[in-house]
Length: 205
Image (cartoon, rainbow, N blue to C red; front, side, top):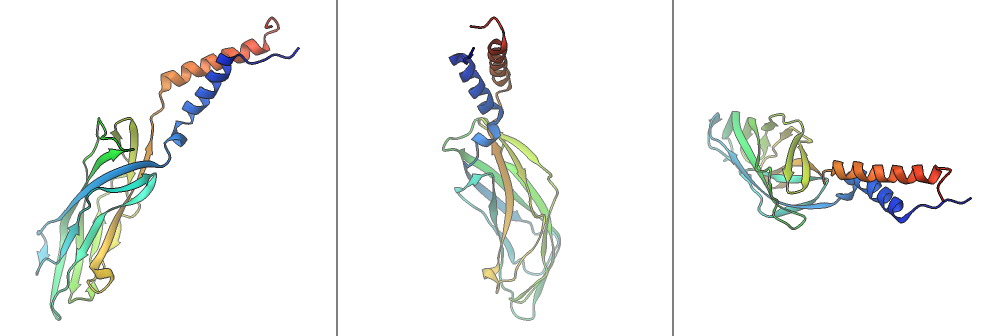
């Protein structure tokens, strides 16, 4: 005898599989964000020539690498130099929109910090490194989206003014998923299991 799935069982199984693979549903989430960065004056010997170019209403599709903004190195007169010794910097990330909506709740702003060490000489020499403080994996919520922020590179050299106009980009990585509605998923999985049990039962029509 051929036994058939009921409509409820088919629907329950399909929805269960969809919910239990929720991480794949949210691929390509559009994130619109802004950053604000500062380089402090502490530990600077000479004229301060390093600044940070912040971003306004930038966007990317998560999961992805994305720019936090740029370190900008200005030229010094020939024969002069500036040394940075554990000079603090910080970058603040704010998620403005996720998939076109202002997120509530919003787990940002997130502050990323570090120090600068090295010397800028004239317009074409730089040994300055930006060393970011370790953050590991930073989880935060934006609306219904769960996010994990990481820093792929935590130690970058800043180019002099004669290379790429003195611009060095700081990058991060964001992975965004829709949290699994666990209770619903388990409920639907149970329904699907009951459907399978009914299918195998000798008394089923």
